[in-house]
Length: 174
Image (cartoon, rainbow, N blue to C red):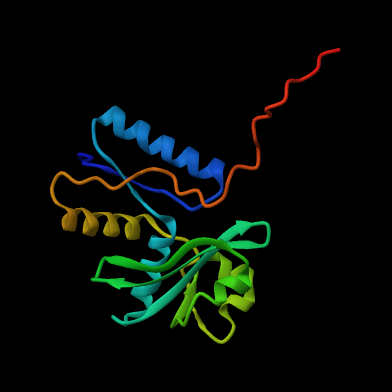
C-alpha cells in the first residue's frame, strides 16, 4: 500500500527511546517524501481509555512511568469520537500529586499499575500504553480540523531537563 504520512509518539517518555522513535519516523518520512505528524503518548492512552468508558462526558487521568518514583500525568476528556482534550498537564509529578490533579471517572496508564494509590477508589482501565490505532485516529481528527496543509508537530515532549550537562570548567591534564 501507498504510505501517505507517518504518525509518531512525541512523548513524554525517557529521552533515548523517544529520540530513537522520532528519528526513525523522520527518516522514513524523508526517504518517502511524506509528512511526519506527532501525537503525544498520553493522548493515545487517554483515547483508548475513553473508548473503553464509552461516556461522552467522562474524564480520565492518564499516568505513565517517569522513573524516579514519579509519573507523567495529564487529565483528559473526549473531543469528539476520535480526539481528546487535555484538561490538566502534562507534567512530571509524584503519584500523590497526580491524584490531586482533579476529579476523574477513571485512571489509565502504566503509572496507575505501578502506584496503586493513583487508582485507589477509582475505576482503573486496561490501556497501560497508547496504541498506533489511537495515535492515527487522533492525528487524522486533528488534521481534518486544522485543514489540508496542516502538520502536527513531531518535536519531542520533554518534561524534565537532561541529567547530563556539559561541563563549563576545563579539564586538567596531568
